Each structure stands twice: as structure tokens, then as C-alpha cells.
Image 1 (cartoon, rainbow over the protein chains, first blue to last red):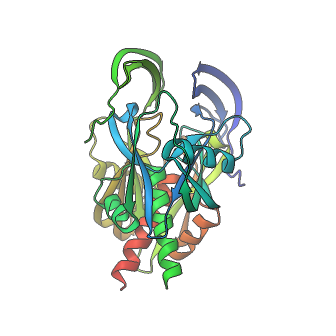
Image 2: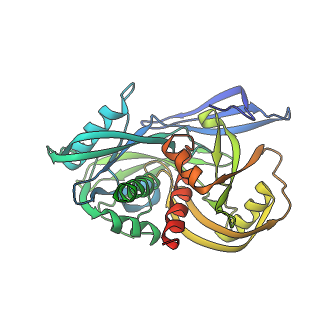
Length: 183
Length: 183
């Protein structure tokens, strides 16, 4: 974990404590000795699940997203509870949102969605060996399940029809892995 | 632009106006008639630039990111000025951050970095035909330029060494395009 050009915090001011996010403003010491402020959105972290069946079809959820005022096609995903392991969270969220369970799980990699202003980390999980479980979305979640062939999903990214970062990452990573194994 | 499961705003409360982000809380009417609150971080939008030379080497910047307390390897990127076209922004940011100009530009696609809580949109631009210009990072930017071969960058994603979402998307998309053309 590199700390090149590190910015030491010399003051931190809490701005907002929401249900999901917190906001703070840090005053930092820059490498040249000047100070600057950094606006930071704290997020609990989340998982996204690339769940794929033996015909290379991927399960998506269609969900309205208030910040962008649009219904997006996304991989199933959910926020981590405090102290929760990504795998536990992924297993819970996949079944809650889609009604499927998976026999095989693999953590592919983790990434920061927008490190310029937020600490959100997203753990990308591959789920295979799907079997029917029981869907039970929570009371504020309205979503629709959609199966899309992997190749079609990849095309939809380049055509601008899939617009969610974690979903684009999950599909491009899975597409790469599938094509590598196929060789 | 689908509006399935749309949530109508019935009240909106401004929370914070920062230099970069704004925060608000919307009260919304759910499809079942209940109400809920949605925390929204407004962002001006940004561009990310996948700049690649004729040897399939990609230009990266290494930059400390306060929210994650780590120095990340990222594609050159920058926020849109009000009303600015993504191409104009990309041309400015590439030269400011790296000292390179590009003769050929192409918009690949755009995506939302974290649509669950933010409206940030990121426009991914491909830049080719690179030639030397003049670097002049702004006074609060401390960064280091690094060239990484495309194949190595792709490996670094799966090894967890490249952790920034826009960068992962740019590299996996470019890797796909290069391998398709090579066929």
C-alpha cells in the first residue's frame, strides 16, 4: 500500500451522518507544505455478484436509481453490514435479490468506485453452480430479474446500454476469464 | 432511458455545498405508496483517458487519494467544468497531467461510478497518436507518470494492484478492443 505524496490530516470536520453515507471535510497538509481541503463521503463498502450459469448467461437486476433518475441494469449487489465478510454478504444478497443460491464462490478482486471523493470499496464475487433459493427483497427494494447472455452484455456496455461501473467491471472481467479458459 | 419503478421526489433537503460535491436528502414516493429517503451526492461529472501508444503501452498517473488513504495507479482523469464537453476536458486533462497530446480521440462509452448514492457520470475516452506537449498540473495535484504495457495492466487488475474503478474499466475495455482487432 503506497503512501507516495501522502496528505496528512490536520483537521477533520463532520458534516453529515446519513443512513448510508457520512460526509466529512478534511484539511490536509500537501507535500509542498501548503494546506488544502478534501471532501470525503464515507460508505460501508459493498459486494457485487457476477452469477453465471452453464450457458454463460448472467443474472441482472433492473432497479431505479434516484441519484441518476433512471432504471439501470446491474449485477446483484448490496452493502456490507458492520464487520460482515464479503462472502457472507454476497450469499445473502444474491438470494434476497434474485432467489438463487450458488454452490461455487470466488472473490475476483476489489476496487474503489470513486476514490477522488469516496472511500467506497466494492468486492467483486463470481458465483457459479446456481440453484433455486428464495427471493425476499427488503421493503424498499423494487427490482426485476433479467438473464442476459455474457456476449450480449459485453456488447451492451460498448453500446452504452449498461451504465453501472461495478456491472461493467464484472462483465468485462468475466468475459475475459471465459474467453481465456475457452482457448 | 427506462423509468421502471420510478421514485417521485416529494421533498428535497440540501445538506452540504462543497467545492466539488453537493449532498442532499430526497424523500421519495415508492411504487407501493410508501415513502423513503434517498441520500444523494451530486458531482459535476468527469472524464477518464485511456491513452495508448503504438506499442500498446498505457499512460497512468500515480496519485494520493485522501478518501482511501492510499496512492493509486489511475488513468489520467479530471472533472468537467460547467457546460464543458467531455472531449475538451479530456484534451486539457491529458496534457496538464501527463504532458502528452493525442491526435486521435474516440469516446468509448460513459458510466455511473456509484449510482446507489451519487449522480457522478464518467466519460471514457480513447486517445491515440500521442505526441509531447507540456505538463502543468494544478497547484494541489501531486502526481507521477507511469507507462504500463496493456497486458501487464490487465494482470495487475486481477492481482488487486490496480484498484480504481474507472481505470479497471478503461483497461479491460481497451484490452478487449485490442484483442478483437488483433484477430
